Length: 399
Length: 240
Image 1 (cartoon, rainbow over the protein chains, first blue to last red):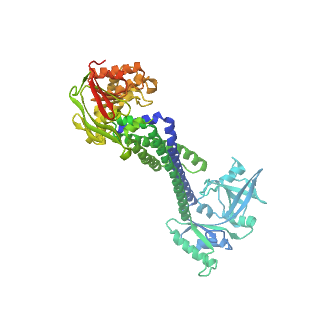
Image 2: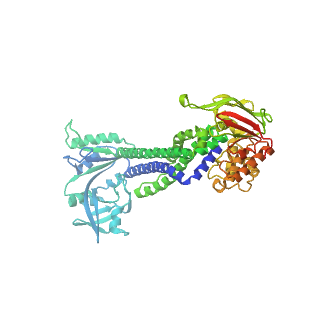
Image 3: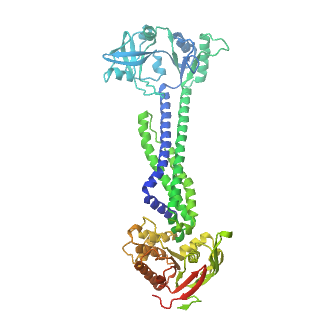
């Protein structure tokens, strides 16, 4: 009986191919939207997680001022703070002070706007940076503030094209700077910033030649494996309050962030966005379901005579109900399948454009398919019941 | 012509004191006011009468599509008016065949598929359906037309497909509601010849509503309705 009903339903769908397609379009778009949103959202979450792990694990970032907003009046760190933390707080891998400045770098006829980070060799360790060629700073260069630099992949590409820059030099403001190394590419950050668009110099070089100040914008502290970051954070805070002479009861005028916390916050945000977008897309699925109900009701009216013939021939009410219900479910499921196919295509293409990894998610595909079949049952039931309850005499008289 | 008070063979159908009232109170309309008759197996009955005389109502009641307001309808001894809707549907499925004035074939569906439809509801296998449908189409003279759809068949051919659909289940009773009403005289005669042959050779009991005296001549018995009552019930001495 089920097989017969399926056969009848398929025949009815085939008889009205164009209308069947337009009916399912709502489901196609709904399922497609849900799957695309969730797939892209998962890809974005993955991208954030990848980036956090590329930043280095167990990394603490220290900035002057309160956590949110600009560092209002809060003094910058001093170069000595890094050494003080390194020597007085235990369990640390490396402490890197950084001072940044936006500059235009020039090589031959090409120029490129980027930012320079002044720091120490500890920066490469705490930031999880690797070099593709060349070397990092030697102690003499750091101490003397020599004009040497390690450049990111983007800067290399923009200034040197396909050439090897190591040993060559670039001009920044009034001074010429020797390129001693090239950083391995890290790609885009979760916030969309190009991490390879950077030049790294010894801290003293930047302080003397670019900022003209003796202070430091931020400190990167990487904690040894197995050491509690929470404990380290507390010790650093106590030390810094002392060094910055903050009275008891006063708020900190600096903040320490754990990258793990940032990672959690960021993935949390993308998850919420994914859920929201998915919910919006689910509403369109609902609208698609109403579309199916609408067409099925029209179809019942249009096929009143046919239903009358079936009832007169001896079809039971249950059989007519089943036929129309299956027709709705088949329509909705076909829509679901089409939606899955188009969503896979769309999310693969969008993932490429948005530069997030494409992760095929079998769960959401299966769920969407079942959901669309369920929509067929729910929105097909009312029209099907109406068809089954028709009075055969009236139905046969219907023009 | 002689008056036929008794049935021809074994009784297939017995109506006694059947009334049917539509609507209520002031608007109530009595379509049937006490109808009694017996139809035997292998009878070929023509029901005649002016519009509104109740002949369609009788057809609907006999066809188990409607129930009488009062009175008894026995089909092979079963009190049909006491059956549930579902039981009446099963009775239709297993014992009745319908032929309508407007043919009522499924659109965009081949003759073969139309004839197979009742067998589909009986749950017969695909091969059994095929064979029975081909046989039925051949019995109505439509061998070779199996794949044609309703739009590709003439009115007479459509009615033949409808008859094939009605007899494919070997029904105990074939109900025909003005089967020649939408056809020209020539086609109508051919359809009546076919029904007559099916009645004689296959022993199918036929009850037909018509208002054309010429078509009624093919029947073995003519029941006339006036104002919801049987006015006359006569047996054709010689049928055409």
